[in-house]
Length: 545
Image (cartoon, rainbow, N blue to C red; front, side, top):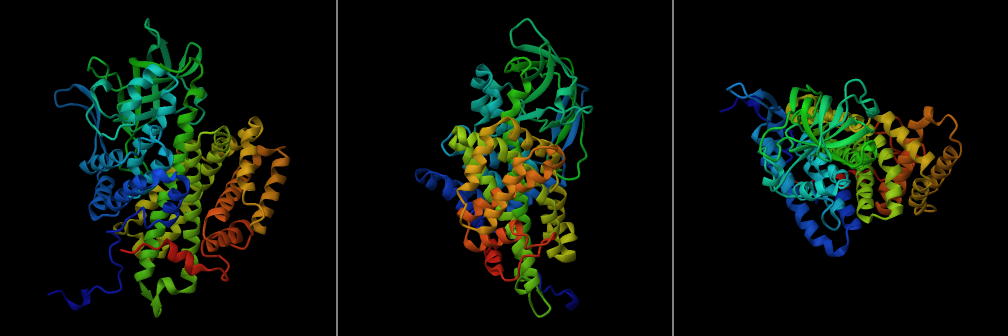
């Protein structure tokens, strides 16, 4: 019999056994809003099944195991043969198999595919964010591969497949493949124009051998990689398969795995190309950046969605804890100041979700105007949403007090993960300067943005004022580089405000316009005006188990 001092009281029940998709009202409403009616029944069924699985005890354990047992590099087998393989915990493969099977690498091959995939990506990432990397890379590689139709004919069907096959074999022998990317080098980072990896053409048209070193190689156990290298005509995109058509291994020497702050279930590697590494050109020589820009934009949107998933998971845990924890004579969730904190966190989470899903819908629409909107809105959203993730997760952790600082709560894992999407695919300055580049070189992008926010004009005076102030900022681009972050932030906030005014419940839109656009909020979370309907915001974010 346990000693009486070990009687456990006043602790929340485990947060398991719920549907991660359906319980997220902002996400479920976005799917309803952006999908055609004839697609909704099937999409709801798929996303609900994924949501139930993600909220289950089993998948939660998979996520914990994959994170606790990070991948290991095996450069040689027991006989001394070079193999350059990465070993993962079985839980990693189970997570990947479930997510590939749920269609999370297939946005380009079915109607409404981007909205459906974005919602699924946001749900599945809450089990363990690390396994989202190969899903994202595979999804994003498709538009780049289409620059070379012969390659796309072979690789695209396997990339869009719902079959996960972990074994390395020639692509012609596989029902499904994963794709990674190896773009940056240690001397240049985001400035890929300074890459020194060389590509020497072979006799057969489109075939090359590579010599060089990549500082970051994402998802190194993938079946193929998009790589940038210097060809005779300049920077060019290549596809480097791990296994050649004859079944032999390509020269792809993994030097080491990165020891990262978070994202520990996922492997990131340094890779060496030794002068015999075979590659197939993708697109024209010298047009490497143009070829990969579609892939870059797609992965940037996934950074937005990944941050939205981390935010949602952090808010869910914070609200769940406070709804069951008693202190100072009542439930924490009923204390006015704690309610303010939770409502503010929920507001930030919903704004991120609504923006990410709107951009996914723009991909599905595929019109010139929607493509122009993506050109400016994706870097702005990537800049702002990923920047907001870390302070939100830190505040959500604090809602659990000392319990949140303990690994068993799961909150430290979320906190370590939270900066990654701000760093990957171009950090904050790169995104802000890309917004400025779009303003200067693509008038259609600004026009599409103004049309998007203009659809909400007249509904809230604070939003109207923020739009006018943004127009004032845009009217004078002198010295804009030094204020590019300020401009990207304002642009993203105005866009979020316009979307919430149009689509969110009145109490959500009112709170956002007051605190984020009207100046009636502080620098920390929990500083919303006390006159707002804070209880409704918290109730909307709550999960019932």
